[in-house]
Image 1 (cartoon, rainbow, N blue to C red):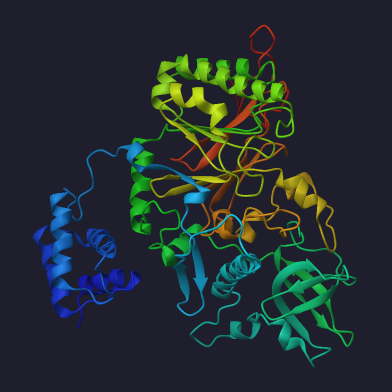
Image 2 (cartoon, one colour):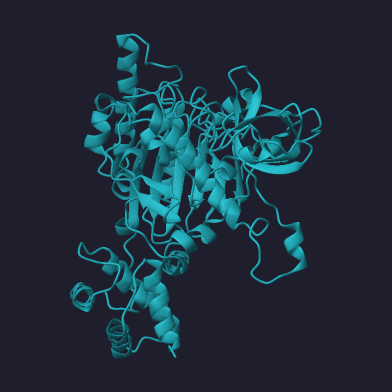
Length: 553
Protein backbone atom coordinates (compact mmCIF):
# COMPACT_ATOMS: atom_id res chain seq x y z
CA UNK A 1 0.00 0.00 0.00
CA UNK A 2 1.07 3.57 -0.66
CA UNK A 3 2.22 5.60 2.30
CA UNK A 4 0.54 8.95 3.07
CA UNK A 5 3.56 10.76 1.61
CA UNK A 6 3.41 8.73 -1.58
CA UNK A 7 -0.27 9.56 -1.97
CA UNK A 8 0.51 13.27 -1.66
CA UNK A 9 3.32 13.00 -4.23
CA UNK A 10 1.07 11.19 -6.71
CA UNK A 11 -1.83 13.60 -6.17
CA UNK A 12 0.26 16.74 -6.64
CA UNK A 13 1.90 15.55 -9.87
CA UNK A 14 -1.45 14.29 -11.17
CA UNK A 15 -2.80 17.84 -10.82
CA UNK A 16 -0.21 18.88 -13.39
CA UNK A 17 -1.22 15.95 -15.66
CA UNK A 18 1.94 13.98 -14.84
CA UNK A 19 2.24 10.35 -13.76
CA UNK A 20 5.05 8.86 -11.66
CA UNK A 21 6.76 5.50 -11.67
CA UNK A 22 8.14 3.66 -8.61
CA UNK A 23 11.67 5.05 -9.12
CA UNK A 24 10.46 8.65 -9.32
CA UNK A 25 8.30 8.27 -6.20
CA UNK A 26 11.18 6.72 -4.30
CA UNK A 27 13.49 9.57 -5.33
CA UNK A 28 11.05 12.20 -4.13
CA UNK A 29 10.56 10.41 -0.82
CA UNK A 30 14.33 10.33 -0.42
CA UNK A 31 14.51 14.09 -1.04
CA UNK A 32 11.82 14.75 1.55
CA UNK A 33 13.59 12.60 4.14
CA UNK A 34 16.98 14.15 3.36
CA UNK A 35 15.66 17.62 4.18
CA UNK A 36 13.64 16.43 7.21
CA UNK A 37 10.40 17.80 5.75
CA UNK A 38 7.58 17.71 8.29
CA UNK A 39 4.31 16.04 7.31
CA UNK A 40 2.44 19.35 7.17
CA UNK A 41 5.04 20.74 4.70
CA UNK A 42 5.16 17.76 2.35
CA UNK A 43 2.51 19.07 -0.04
CA UNK A 44 4.15 22.48 -0.36
CA UNK A 45 7.56 20.91 -1.01
CA UNK A 46 6.24 18.56 -3.69
CA UNK A 47 4.30 21.45 -5.26
CA UNK A 48 7.57 23.37 -5.57
CA UNK A 49 9.22 20.51 -7.45
CA UNK A 50 6.17 19.66 -9.58
CA UNK A 51 5.69 23.24 -10.68
CA UNK A 52 9.33 23.57 -11.70
CA UNK A 53 9.21 20.21 -13.51
CA UNK A 54 6.14 21.37 -15.44
CA UNK A 55 8.13 24.35 -16.78
CA UNK A 56 10.75 22.14 -18.45
CA UNK A 57 10.65 22.06 -22.24
CA UNK A 58 11.32 18.32 -22.36
CA UNK A 59 8.85 17.42 -19.61
CA UNK A 60 6.55 14.59 -20.72
CA UNK A 61 3.31 13.31 -19.19
CA UNK A 62 5.28 10.35 -17.79
CA UNK A 63 7.83 11.85 -15.39
CA UNK A 64 11.40 10.97 -16.33
CA UNK A 65 13.84 10.46 -13.46
CA UNK A 66 16.81 12.27 -15.13
CA UNK A 67 14.67 15.39 -15.69
CA UNK A 68 13.35 15.17 -12.14
CA UNK A 69 16.91 15.03 -10.77
CA UNK A 70 17.90 17.98 -12.93
CA UNK A 71 14.97 20.00 -11.58
CA UNK A 72 16.00 19.19 -8.02
CA UNK A 73 19.60 20.26 -8.70
CA UNK A 74 18.39 23.55 -10.21
CA UNK A 75 16.28 24.26 -7.14
CA UNK A 76 19.24 23.44 -4.90
CA UNK A 77 21.54 25.74 -6.87
CA UNK A 78 19.03 28.61 -6.70
CA UNK A 79 18.76 28.27 -2.95
CA UNK A 80 15.10 27.19 -2.97
CA UNK A 81 15.06 24.13 -0.76
CA UNK A 82 11.81 22.24 -0.29
CA UNK A 83 10.01 23.23 2.85
CA UNK A 84 12.12 26.31 3.53
CA UNK A 85 10.57 29.74 2.96
CA UNK A 86 12.57 32.86 2.24
CA UNK A 87 13.70 34.85 5.25
CA UNK A 88 12.58 38.07 3.58
CA UNK A 89 9.85 38.58 1.02
CA UNK A 90 10.55 41.37 -1.43
CA UNK A 91 7.10 42.76 -2.37
CA UNK A 92 8.43 44.27 -5.61
CA UNK A 93 9.57 40.83 -6.73
CA UNK A 94 6.00 39.56 -6.38
CA UNK A 95 4.24 42.58 -7.87
CA UNK A 96 3.23 42.47 -11.55
CA UNK A 97 1.14 44.81 -13.70
CA UNK A 98 -0.64 42.84 -16.41
CA UNK A 99 -1.64 44.49 -19.67
CA UNK A 100 -4.79 43.10 -21.33
CA UNK A 101 -2.91 42.64 -24.60
CA UNK A 102 -0.20 40.57 -22.92
CA UNK A 103 -2.46 38.06 -21.18
CA UNK A 104 -2.27 34.53 -22.61
CA UNK A 105 -5.50 33.28 -24.18
CA UNK A 106 -6.99 30.19 -22.52
CA UNK A 107 -10.09 28.54 -23.96
CA UNK A 108 -12.29 25.86 -22.45
CA UNK A 109 -11.86 22.47 -24.14
CA UNK A 110 -14.73 19.98 -24.08
CA UNK A 111 -12.43 17.18 -25.16
CA UNK A 112 -9.94 17.65 -22.32
CA UNK A 113 -12.41 18.99 -19.78
CA UNK A 114 -10.08 21.84 -18.86
CA UNK A 115 -8.55 25.05 -20.21
CA UNK A 116 -6.08 24.87 -23.06
CA UNK A 117 -3.81 27.64 -24.24
CA UNK A 118 -4.44 29.13 -27.69
CA UNK A 119 -1.31 29.36 -29.81
CA UNK A 120 -2.80 31.52 -32.58
CA UNK A 121 -1.52 35.08 -32.83
CA UNK A 122 -4.42 37.41 -31.84
CA UNK A 123 -5.62 40.03 -34.30
CA UNK A 124 -7.26 43.42 -33.83
CA UNK A 125 -9.50 42.68 -36.84
CA UNK A 126 -10.89 39.32 -35.82
CA UNK A 127 -13.23 37.36 -38.08
CA UNK A 128 -16.91 36.63 -37.48
CA UNK A 129 -15.90 33.11 -36.44
CA UNK A 130 -13.68 34.57 -33.73
CA UNK A 131 -16.60 36.61 -32.31
CA UNK A 132 -18.77 33.49 -32.24
CA UNK A 133 -15.97 31.52 -30.58
CA UNK A 134 -15.55 34.21 -27.90
CA UNK A 135 -19.27 34.11 -27.06
CA UNK A 136 -19.29 30.32 -27.04
CA UNK A 137 -16.28 30.32 -24.73
CA UNK A 138 -18.13 32.61 -22.30
CA UNK A 139 -21.02 30.14 -22.30
CA UNK A 140 -18.75 27.12 -21.76
CA UNK A 141 -16.83 28.73 -18.89
CA UNK A 142 -20.05 29.55 -17.03
CA UNK A 143 -21.68 26.24 -17.89
CA UNK A 144 -18.87 24.14 -16.43
CA UNK A 145 -19.19 26.04 -13.14
CA UNK A 146 -22.96 25.48 -13.10
CA UNK A 147 -22.60 21.75 -13.65
CA UNK A 148 -20.17 21.64 -10.71
CA UNK A 149 -22.64 23.42 -8.41
CA UNK A 150 -24.20 21.28 -5.69
CA UNK A 151 -27.72 21.95 -7.01
CA UNK A 152 -26.83 20.53 -10.42
CA UNK A 153 -24.34 17.77 -9.56
CA UNK A 154 -25.72 14.40 -8.42
CA UNK A 155 -24.21 12.87 -5.31
CA UNK A 156 -22.34 9.59 -5.65
CA UNK A 157 -24.39 8.27 -2.71
CA UNK A 158 -28.15 7.76 -3.37
CA UNK A 159 -30.08 10.23 -1.21
CA UNK A 160 -33.45 11.90 -1.14
CA UNK A 161 -31.86 15.06 -2.48
CA UNK A 162 -31.35 13.41 -5.88
CA UNK A 163 -35.02 13.88 -6.72
CA UNK A 164 -34.61 17.66 -6.27
CA UNK A 165 -31.60 17.81 -8.59
CA UNK A 166 -31.86 20.51 -11.27
CA UNK A 167 -31.20 19.37 -14.84
CA UNK A 168 -30.35 21.84 -17.58
CA UNK A 169 -31.92 21.09 -20.95
CA UNK A 170 -30.99 22.29 -24.41
CA UNK A 171 -33.28 24.20 -26.78
CA UNK A 172 -33.24 21.25 -29.19
CA UNK A 173 -34.83 19.08 -26.47
CA UNK A 174 -37.92 21.32 -26.51
CA UNK A 175 -39.08 20.13 -29.92
CA UNK A 176 -42.23 18.03 -29.75
CA UNK A 177 -42.58 18.43 -25.98
CA UNK A 178 -45.12 21.22 -25.65
CA UNK A 179 -46.75 21.51 -22.23
CA UNK A 180 -43.67 20.32 -20.33
CA UNK A 181 -41.53 22.33 -17.94
CA UNK A 182 -37.81 22.86 -18.54
CA UNK A 183 -34.76 24.59 -17.11
CA UNK A 184 -32.65 26.24 -19.80
CA UNK A 185 -29.30 28.01 -19.81
CA UNK A 186 -28.34 30.45 -22.53
CA UNK A 187 -27.83 34.04 -23.60
CA UNK A 188 -30.53 36.71 -23.76
CA UNK A 189 -30.69 38.11 -27.28
CA UNK A 190 -33.12 39.63 -29.76
CA UNK A 191 -34.20 37.81 -32.89
CA UNK A 192 -34.27 39.40 -36.35
CA UNK A 193 -37.92 40.26 -35.69
CA UNK A 194 -36.96 42.11 -32.50
CA UNK A 195 -38.38 39.50 -30.08
CA UNK A 196 -36.49 38.60 -26.92
CA UNK A 197 -35.10 35.06 -27.10
CA UNK A 198 -32.82 32.66 -25.28
CA UNK A 199 -29.96 31.34 -27.38
CA UNK A 200 -27.69 28.40 -26.57
CA UNK A 201 -25.23 26.30 -28.55
CA UNK A 202 -28.04 24.25 -30.16
CA UNK A 203 -30.66 26.83 -31.09
CA UNK A 204 -32.92 29.66 -30.06
CA UNK A 205 -36.36 29.96 -28.46
CA UNK A 206 -38.63 32.98 -28.02
CA UNK A 207 -39.33 34.01 -24.42
CA UNK A 208 -42.67 35.09 -22.96
CA UNK A 209 -42.39 37.08 -19.71
CA UNK A 210 -46.15 37.59 -19.22
CA UNK A 211 -46.26 35.12 -16.30
CA UNK A 212 -43.16 36.43 -14.54
CA UNK A 213 -43.95 38.78 -11.68
CA UNK A 214 -40.47 39.59 -10.42
CA UNK A 215 -37.05 38.24 -11.50
CA UNK A 216 -34.33 37.36 -9.04
CA UNK A 217 -31.57 39.75 -7.93
CA UNK A 218 -29.41 41.48 -10.48
CA UNK A 219 -29.82 43.23 -13.80
CA UNK A 220 -30.79 41.27 -16.90
CA UNK A 221 -29.45 42.74 -20.12
CA UNK A 222 -29.13 41.63 -23.71
CA UNK A 223 -25.99 39.52 -23.85
CA UNK A 224 -26.29 38.16 -20.29
CA UNK A 225 -26.21 34.40 -19.69
CA UNK A 226 -29.12 33.31 -17.53
CA UNK A 227 -30.98 30.31 -16.16
CA UNK A 228 -34.67 30.34 -17.05
CA UNK A 229 -37.40 27.96 -15.90
CA UNK A 230 -40.72 27.76 -17.67
CA UNK A 231 -43.16 25.91 -19.91
CA UNK A 232 -42.84 25.23 -23.62
CA UNK A 233 -46.04 25.97 -25.53
CA UNK A 234 -47.66 24.86 -28.80
CA UNK A 235 -46.78 28.30 -30.21
CA UNK A 236 -43.08 27.39 -29.86
CA UNK A 237 -42.56 30.01 -27.17
CA UNK A 238 -41.11 29.54 -23.70
CA UNK A 239 -43.28 30.99 -20.92
CA UNK A 240 -40.85 32.07 -18.21
CA UNK A 241 -41.85 31.56 -14.58
CA UNK A 242 -38.39 32.17 -13.07
CA UNK A 243 -35.15 33.73 -14.25
CA UNK A 244 -31.84 34.15 -12.50
CA UNK A 245 -28.14 34.61 -12.99
CA UNK A 246 -25.88 31.53 -12.92
CA UNK A 247 -24.39 30.70 -9.50
CA UNK A 248 -21.01 32.29 -8.90
CA UNK A 249 -18.09 30.02 -8.06
CA UNK A 250 -15.68 31.24 -5.40
CA UNK A 251 -12.03 31.87 -6.19
CA UNK A 252 -10.96 29.17 -3.74
CA UNK A 253 -13.06 26.51 -5.51
CA UNK A 254 -11.83 27.50 -8.98
CA UNK A 255 -8.20 27.73 -7.87
CA UNK A 256 -8.39 24.30 -6.26
CA UNK A 257 -9.25 22.89 -9.69
CA UNK A 258 -7.27 25.13 -12.05
CA UNK A 259 -4.49 26.33 -9.76
CA UNK A 260 -1.88 25.08 -12.23
CA UNK A 261 -3.22 27.24 -15.10
CA UNK A 262 -1.28 30.48 -15.55
CA UNK A 263 -4.16 32.72 -16.64
CA UNK A 264 -2.13 35.95 -16.28
CA UNK A 265 1.11 34.74 -17.80
CA UNK A 266 3.16 35.72 -14.73
CA UNK A 267 3.66 32.29 -13.23
CA UNK A 268 1.05 30.14 -11.53
CA UNK A 269 0.94 29.71 -7.79
CA UNK A 270 -0.76 26.83 -6.05
CA UNK A 271 -3.56 27.30 -3.50
CA UNK A 272 -1.16 26.12 -0.81
CA UNK A 273 1.38 28.80 -1.79
CA UNK A 274 -1.41 31.39 -1.86
CA UNK A 275 -2.38 30.48 1.70
CA UNK A 276 1.22 30.72 2.91
CA UNK A 277 1.73 34.04 1.14
CA UNK A 278 -1.51 35.37 2.64
CA UNK A 279 -0.26 34.58 6.13
CA UNK A 280 3.06 36.30 5.53
CA UNK A 281 1.36 39.35 3.97
CA UNK A 282 -0.75 39.73 7.13
CA UNK A 283 2.34 39.48 9.32
CA UNK A 284 4.88 41.47 7.28
CA UNK A 285 2.87 43.86 5.09
CA UNK A 286 -0.13 44.65 7.25
CA UNK A 287 0.08 48.40 6.49
CA UNK A 288 0.66 48.11 2.74
CA UNK A 289 -1.98 49.99 0.74
CA UNK A 290 -3.13 50.46 -2.84
CA UNK A 291 -4.85 53.77 -3.73
CA UNK A 292 -7.48 53.99 -6.48
CA UNK A 293 -8.67 57.22 -8.12
CA UNK A 294 -11.21 57.65 -10.92
CA UNK A 295 -12.01 60.60 -13.18
CA UNK A 296 -8.88 62.54 -12.32
CA UNK A 297 -9.70 65.59 -14.43
CA UNK A 298 -6.37 67.30 -14.93
CA UNK A 299 -8.08 70.34 -16.45
CA UNK A 300 -10.17 70.83 -13.32
CA UNK A 301 -8.81 73.84 -11.36
CA UNK A 302 -8.74 72.06 -7.99
CA UNK A 303 -7.68 68.52 -8.96
CA UNK A 304 -3.94 69.05 -8.47
CA UNK A 305 -4.66 70.90 -5.23
CA UNK A 306 -6.58 67.90 -3.96
CA UNK A 307 -3.77 65.53 -4.96
CA UNK A 308 -1.22 67.78 -3.24
CA UNK A 309 -3.24 67.66 -0.02
CA UNK A 310 -3.30 63.85 -0.22
CA UNK A 311 0.44 63.60 -0.88
CA UNK A 312 1.20 66.01 1.97
CA UNK A 313 -0.79 63.89 4.40
CA UNK A 314 0.82 60.69 3.12
CA UNK A 315 4.30 62.08 3.77
CA UNK A 316 3.40 63.63 7.15
CA UNK A 317 1.85 60.39 8.42
CA UNK A 318 4.39 58.06 6.73
CA UNK A 319 1.51 56.44 4.87
CA UNK A 320 3.06 55.94 1.44
CA UNK A 321 0.93 53.72 -0.84
CA UNK A 322 2.66 50.84 -2.57
CA UNK A 323 0.52 51.32 -5.68
CA UNK A 324 -1.42 54.38 -6.77
CA UNK A 325 -3.85 53.83 -9.66
CA UNK A 326 -5.30 56.78 -11.56
CA UNK A 327 -8.17 56.01 -13.91
CA UNK A 328 -9.49 58.37 -16.58
CA UNK A 329 -11.12 60.29 -17.85
CA UNK A 330 -8.20 62.67 -17.45
CA UNK A 331 -10.14 65.57 -18.94
CA UNK A 332 -13.57 66.94 -18.09
CA UNK A 333 -14.45 66.83 -21.76
CA UNK A 334 -13.44 64.48 -24.52
CA UNK A 335 -10.45 65.50 -26.62
CA UNK A 336 -10.53 62.79 -29.30
CA UNK A 337 -12.48 65.14 -31.59
CA UNK A 338 -11.11 68.35 -30.11
CA UNK A 339 -8.87 70.98 -31.58
CA UNK A 340 -5.09 71.07 -31.40
CA UNK A 341 -5.40 73.49 -28.48
CA UNK A 342 -7.51 70.90 -26.57
CA UNK A 343 -4.87 68.26 -27.20
CA UNK A 344 -2.16 70.65 -26.01
CA UNK A 345 -4.07 71.32 -22.77
CA UNK A 346 -4.45 67.56 -22.35
CA UNK A 347 -0.68 67.10 -22.54
CA UNK A 348 -0.06 70.06 -20.25
CA UNK A 349 -2.29 68.45 -17.63
CA UNK A 350 -0.08 65.35 -17.53
CA UNK A 351 3.05 67.52 -17.46
CA UNK A 352 1.71 69.38 -14.41
CA UNK A 353 0.85 66.08 -12.75
CA UNK A 354 4.39 64.79 -13.41
CA UNK A 355 5.86 67.93 -11.82
CA UNK A 356 3.59 67.52 -8.79
CA UNK A 357 4.50 63.88 -8.24
CA UNK A 358 8.19 64.60 -8.83
CA UNK A 359 8.14 67.19 -6.02
CA UNK A 360 7.60 64.34 -3.51
CA UNK A 361 10.84 62.28 -3.62
CA UNK A 362 9.65 59.76 -1.01
CA UNK A 363 6.47 58.96 -2.94
CA UNK A 364 8.28 58.98 -6.28
CA UNK A 365 10.82 56.45 -5.03
CA UNK A 366 8.45 54.05 -3.26
CA UNK A 367 5.14 54.17 -5.13
CA UNK A 368 4.16 52.47 -8.38
CA UNK A 369 1.92 54.76 -10.45
CA UNK A 370 -0.59 53.12 -12.82
CA UNK A 371 -2.55 55.10 -15.41
CA UNK A 372 -5.67 53.54 -16.92
CA UNK A 373 -7.42 55.31 -19.83
CA UNK A 374 -11.09 56.20 -19.59
CA UNK A 375 -13.77 56.16 -22.30
CA UNK A 376 -12.87 59.61 -23.69
CA UNK A 377 -9.10 59.55 -23.23
CA UNK A 378 -6.60 59.56 -26.07
CA UNK A 379 -5.72 55.93 -26.78
CA UNK A 380 -4.94 53.94 -29.91
CA UNK A 381 -8.41 52.39 -29.99
CA UNK A 382 -11.86 52.96 -28.50
CA UNK A 383 -13.02 49.32 -28.35
CA UNK A 384 -12.50 47.17 -25.26
CA UNK A 385 -9.89 46.33 -24.25
CA UNK A 386 -8.41 49.78 -24.75
CA UNK A 387 -4.73 50.31 -25.30
CA UNK A 388 -2.72 52.56 -22.93
CA UNK A 389 -2.64 56.34 -23.15
CA UNK A 390 -0.82 57.72 -26.18
CA UNK A 391 2.85 58.15 -25.39
CA UNK A 392 3.15 61.79 -26.53
CA UNK A 393 1.02 62.94 -23.58
CA UNK A 394 2.98 61.02 -20.95
CA UNK A 395 6.59 61.80 -21.89
CA UNK A 396 7.29 63.86 -18.76
CA UNK A 397 5.54 61.29 -16.54
CA UNK A 398 7.82 58.55 -17.82
CA UNK A 399 10.92 60.69 -17.41
CA UNK A 400 10.21 61.90 -13.85
CA UNK A 401 8.60 58.83 -12.27
CA UNK A 402 10.73 55.66 -12.14
CA UNK A 403 7.83 53.31 -11.39
CA UNK A 404 5.18 54.40 -13.89
CA UNK A 405 2.95 51.91 -15.71
CA UNK A 406 0.80 52.97 -18.65
CA UNK A 407 -1.80 50.21 -18.58
CA UNK A 408 -4.60 49.07 -20.80
CA UNK A 409 -8.26 49.21 -19.83
CA UNK A 410 -8.93 46.79 -18.22
CA UNK A 411 -5.68 45.81 -16.55
CA UNK A 412 -4.70 43.63 -13.62
CA UNK A 413 -2.36 43.70 -10.66
CA UNK A 414 -0.91 40.42 -9.44
CA UNK A 415 0.46 40.67 -5.92
CA UNK A 416 1.72 37.32 -4.61
CA UNK A 417 -1.39 35.12 -4.93
CA UNK A 418 -3.85 38.02 -5.17
CA UNK A 419 -5.35 39.36 -8.37
CA UNK A 420 -6.84 42.86 -8.59
CA UNK A 421 -8.79 43.78 -11.75
CA UNK A 422 -9.12 47.47 -12.68
CA UNK A 423 -11.83 48.48 -15.14
CA UNK A 424 -12.78 52.05 -16.10
CA UNK A 425 -16.11 52.14 -17.90
CA UNK A 426 -19.55 53.59 -17.16
CA UNK A 427 -21.13 50.12 -17.18
CA UNK A 428 -23.89 50.89 -14.70
CA UNK A 429 -25.64 53.39 -16.96
CA UNK A 430 -25.07 51.21 -20.02
CA UNK A 431 -26.61 48.16 -18.39
CA UNK A 432 -29.58 50.12 -17.06
CA UNK A 433 -30.24 51.39 -20.58
CA UNK A 434 -30.30 47.84 -21.94
CA UNK A 435 -32.47 45.99 -19.44
CA UNK A 436 -34.70 43.36 -21.04
CA UNK A 437 -37.64 41.24 -19.93
CA UNK A 438 -39.31 42.23 -16.69
CA UNK A 439 -37.43 45.23 -15.39
CA UNK A 440 -37.04 45.08 -11.59
CA UNK A 441 -37.83 48.00 -9.33
CA UNK A 442 -34.21 48.33 -8.31
CA UNK A 443 -33.02 50.26 -5.32
CA UNK A 444 -29.57 51.70 -4.70
CA UNK A 445 -28.46 48.64 -2.73
CA UNK A 446 -29.61 46.35 -5.55
CA UNK A 447 -27.74 48.34 -8.18
CA UNK A 448 -24.44 47.60 -6.48
CA UNK A 449 -25.01 43.93 -7.31
CA UNK A 450 -25.47 44.20 -11.01
CA UNK A 451 -24.21 40.71 -11.67
CA UNK A 452 -20.88 41.24 -13.40
CA UNK A 453 -19.31 38.63 -11.12
CA UNK A 454 -22.10 36.14 -11.84
CA UNK A 455 -21.48 36.65 -15.56
CA UNK A 456 -17.73 36.05 -15.13
CA UNK A 457 -17.13 38.92 -17.53
CA UNK A 458 -16.58 42.68 -17.27
CA UNK A 459 -18.86 43.51 -20.22
CA UNK A 460 -21.77 41.01 -20.31
CA UNK A 461 -23.46 42.71 -23.26
CA UNK A 462 -23.83 41.95 -26.94
CA UNK A 463 -21.23 43.24 -29.36
CA UNK A 464 -23.55 45.85 -30.86
CA UNK A 465 -24.04 47.41 -27.40
CA UNK A 466 -20.47 47.10 -26.12
CA UNK A 467 -17.95 46.24 -28.86
CA UNK A 468 -15.10 43.98 -27.74
CA UNK A 469 -12.04 42.84 -29.66
CA UNK A 470 -12.92 39.16 -30.11
CA UNK A 471 -9.36 37.80 -29.91
CA UNK A 472 -8.86 39.64 -26.60
CA UNK A 473 -12.22 38.81 -25.04
CA UNK A 474 -10.42 36.58 -22.54
CA UNK A 475 -8.82 39.70 -21.00
CA UNK A 476 -12.30 40.74 -19.75
CA UNK A 477 -13.01 37.36 -18.20
CA UNK A 478 -13.54 37.18 -14.44
CA UNK A 479 -12.77 33.49 -13.98
CA UNK A 480 -11.34 32.38 -11.69
CA UNK A 481 -12.91 35.08 -9.58
CA UNK A 482 -10.29 37.76 -8.75
CA UNK A 483 -9.40 38.75 -5.22
CA UNK A 484 -10.71 42.27 -5.86
CA UNK A 485 -12.38 44.15 -8.73
CA UNK A 486 -12.19 47.92 -9.10
CA UNK A 487 -15.21 49.04 -11.15
CA UNK A 488 -14.38 52.70 -11.68
CA UNK A 489 -17.70 54.22 -12.73
CA UNK A 490 -19.56 57.52 -12.64
CA UNK A 491 -21.95 55.78 -10.26
CA UNK A 492 -21.66 56.59 -6.56
CA UNK A 493 -18.82 55.12 -4.52
CA UNK A 494 -19.48 51.74 -2.91
CA UNK A 495 -17.71 48.63 -1.68
CA UNK A 496 -18.95 45.10 -1.04
CA UNK A 497 -17.67 41.52 -0.85
CA UNK A 498 -19.38 38.83 -2.91
CA UNK A 499 -18.32 35.16 -2.87
CA UNK A 500 -14.99 36.21 -1.38
CA UNK A 501 -14.31 38.81 -4.11
CA UNK A 502 -14.11 42.40 -2.91
CA UNK A 503 -15.73 44.88 -5.33
CA UNK A 504 -15.27 48.62 -5.04
CA UNK A 505 -15.99 51.81 -6.93
CA UNK A 506 -13.75 54.69 -5.83
CA UNK A 507 -16.17 57.30 -7.21
CA UNK A 508 -15.29 60.45 -9.12
CA UNK A 509 -12.31 62.48 -7.93
CA UNK A 510 -13.99 65.78 -8.72
CA UNK A 511 -16.29 68.28 -7.04
CA UNK A 512 -16.01 69.15 -3.38
CA UNK A 513 -15.10 65.82 -1.78
CA UNK A 514 -12.18 64.51 -3.92
CA UNK A 515 -12.99 60.96 -2.97
CA UNK A 516 -10.89 57.85 -3.57
CA UNK A 517 -10.49 54.36 -2.13
CA UNK A 518 -7.68 52.42 -0.52
CA UNK A 519 -7.29 48.65 -0.67
CA UNK A 520 -5.31 46.65 1.89
CA UNK A 521 -3.90 43.33 0.60
CA UNK A 522 -3.47 42.10 4.18
CA UNK A 523 -7.22 42.26 4.92
CA UNK A 524 -8.50 42.19 1.31
CA UNK A 525 -10.85 45.03 2.19
CA UNK A 526 -11.12 48.66 1.10
CA UNK A 527 -11.93 51.97 2.74
CA UNK A 528 -13.37 55.22 1.40
CA UNK A 529 -11.43 58.43 1.79
CA UNK A 530 -11.96 62.03 0.77
CA UNK A 531 -9.71 65.08 0.57
CA UNK A 532 -12.14 67.96 0.83
CA UNK A 533 -10.17 71.02 -0.22
CA UNK A 534 -11.34 74.60 -0.27
CA UNK A 535 -10.07 77.36 -2.55
CA UNK A 536 -7.71 78.59 0.19
CA UNK A 537 -6.16 75.13 0.54
CA UNK A 538 -7.75 74.41 3.89
CA UNK A 539 -9.81 71.46 4.97
CA UNK A 540 -13.52 71.93 4.35
CA UNK A 541 -16.38 69.77 5.63
CA UNK A 542 -16.95 66.58 3.71
CA UNK A 543 -20.23 66.75 1.83
CA UNK A 544 -20.76 63.02 2.07
CA UNK A 545 -22.22 61.25 5.08
CA UNK A 546 -19.93 59.54 7.55
CA UNK A 547 -21.35 56.18 6.44
CA UNK A 548 -20.10 56.73 2.89
CA UNK A 549 -16.72 58.14 3.78
CA UNK A 550 -14.91 56.85 6.84
CA UNK A 551 -11.74 58.89 6.54
CA UNK A 552 -10.86 62.42 5.59
CA UNK A 553 -7.60 64.12 4.76
